[in-house]
Image (tube, rainbow, N blue to C red; front, side):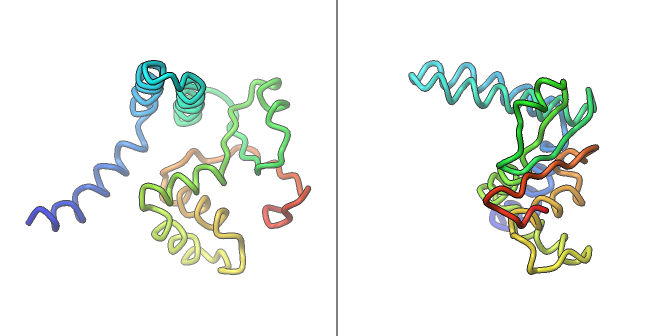
Length: 148
């Protein structure tokens, strides 16, 4: 019974939580508290910063820009845009077990299986409402041409 509950209820609860800005506020607070106590201050700062940006993106506090790993994110911050890293979000989705469903969702939505799996996963997450919808997509083709 517990196994069935885990496989049916937990993904629904997790999905619901990932769509809530409060989740990211709490995650940022956790990062500041938890990592500073373990002498991993830089990880806490990163988690807090990332959580704040996700919360801002979900609340649509500004224009959300997706950029690949080689895009000039410093420019986005300087323009007061809210950047999202689809490749990082896809990797996190894989860590929590959402990547297969997201990729299947993207492929069902006519995204070819020849496209990089990071981008198929990100598009599936977007189609499922688990990551913020982009207002702008900026890509640099330097080194990796799959995002263009």
